[in-house]
Length: 118
Length: 110
Image (cartoon, rainbow over all chains, first blue to last red; front, side, top):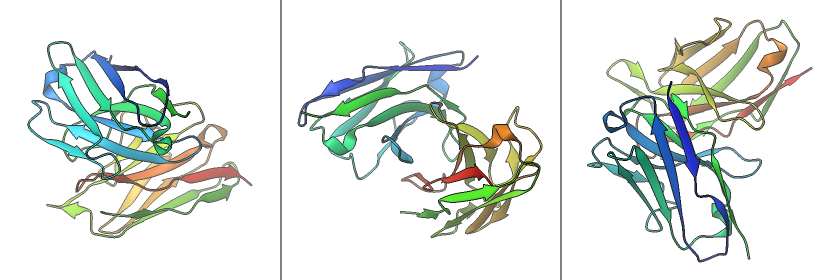
C-alpha cells in the first residue's frame, strides 16, 4: 500500500525558515517523481514544486521560486521542502504527492500544516 | 501559465445528474492525450483522483463518475448523484509546468 506521511509543519514567524519532510513507503520511491502541493485555509489547491526521480529535473511555482527548495533522499525514501523567507501567504496545509511527468497526482499524503504568523 | 476556470458551486438533487465544467486558457492535449485530471476533496481529507487523462476512471472509483472533453473544454459528470458525492471537485492540467488547478466547484444539495 502506497503511503506518504508528511511532517515538520508548525507555527513560524514571518521571515523564518522551516523544513518539511515526506516519508514514502509501499512503492519504489526512486522510480517516481514527487511533488509538494499546498492548500491555504478554505482555499483551493496550488502546486508548489516537482522533482524527478533522480533529481535531474526540478520545477517551482513562481510564488515560491527563490525561497523554497525541493529535494529528495532516495536512500531514505524521503522528500523534503526547505522553506525560507516565509510569508503569511505561505500559511497552508502542505501535501506531498506522487506522480510521473504528465500524469495525475494519484497518491497524496494527509498533509502538514504550516502557519506563518508573528 | 495555463488557467483553469470552474464555476464556484453547483446545486443538485440526489439521484439527478451533475455536470461540472472546466475550461482551460490553452489546449491541454498532446499526442492524442488530454492532460486533464479531476479530483474530489471532502472536508478534512486529502484530494482523491477520480478521472485521469480526460476520461479514464481511476482505480476504485464508481462508474457513476465520468469525464469527457478535449482541447480546452472538459466536463466531469456524476450520474446519479449520491449523498456521499457532496464535496468540492477540482480539475488539474499536467501538460505544462507550472501544473495548475481550477479553483474548485463545490457540489451542494438542492
